Image 1 (cartoon, rainbow over the protein chains, first blue to last red):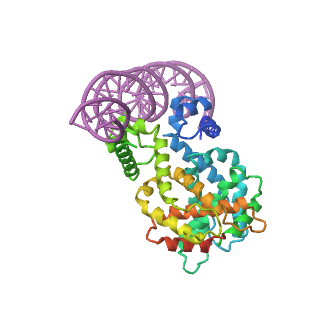
Image 2 (cartoon, each protein chain N blue to C red):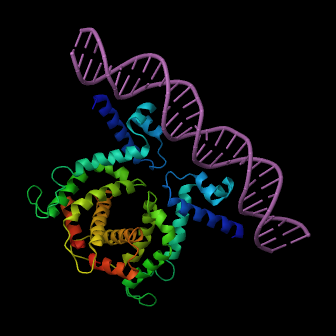
Length: 179
Length: 179
DNA sequence: TTTTATAGCGAACATCTTGTTCTGTAATCA
DNA sequence: TGATTACAGAACAAGATGTTCGCTATAAAA
């Protein structure tokens, strides 16, 4: 990738997350973004088809970081790199914490929905092999419940309660839900 | 309220929910809505300032129905009308089921976020008096967890798994979460 | 029923946003 | 150095927004 492209992309990403802390996603125009990023109109559209695509690109960027390493392993008893399932979730929380600056703006507003949907897709893969069968509760329900409440926990944590440590958060989570 | 106003409002509501099953909220224009509802442009803006306000109005409408009666009582041991806490949640699920037609479109898409936020605000009030203190888990966390996972449960139920009965859903819920 | 008030219609409008196209310039990579 | 490609800037049409106007039709009050 050309250095100019990398710079432009970074400038747009940065401008976008900065703007999201001041204005709502829907009221944000492409004009606002290119003004803040100080790039030409043509340049923006050379990189992203629409504002929505830009949002998706940023989310992909974040999750590529958060779910890097061998974190996606589905083996229930794979203690090789990240230890237990709980350790793996804690590890994810650490990665989210690092990206908190970018995430906070995205999370507060309508576009939080997009972020959460992406996030849950990744979580589904991670949780899938981890659930024990419970009598009379459909596996599908359990999976949705575990993923949904973990995602909501993260949202709660990152917007307003980030004084808790990743370890504390996963402690709370595992005490509140039947996994 | 004038009968003409009621009719117009209903026509717009109906058109809006119908359109949301076909197109995404963000790609939906005021023009689309007034075409589908067959009302004049002026009329739309006489009723709603923006598309967002329309969405909020519909949500208010729905929740006014869902949380009607004495359902909002905060008394933990108020068995007067709806029985136990669990019965009260089941009752809410019944009301949601009745409005399912309108809700489904709203829930699938970006505007699901708006619906869920509203929904959770109501749920907070209902759950607030119901939680027992758990050692080492902040009450704030517990509340967010219980509300978040119930809301996610409802979303899961209404879009794609509505073959389960309200009783079954609250059964699943109470078996999965520590309330 | 008649009167009065007001909701709705349709057209026109200025304004803003979008997404595209063009030409010239400057940075990058080989 | 030379070929390539990203970017800037301006201009553009198409479409959406939100408001204004005068006129009609409907509803509520007398």
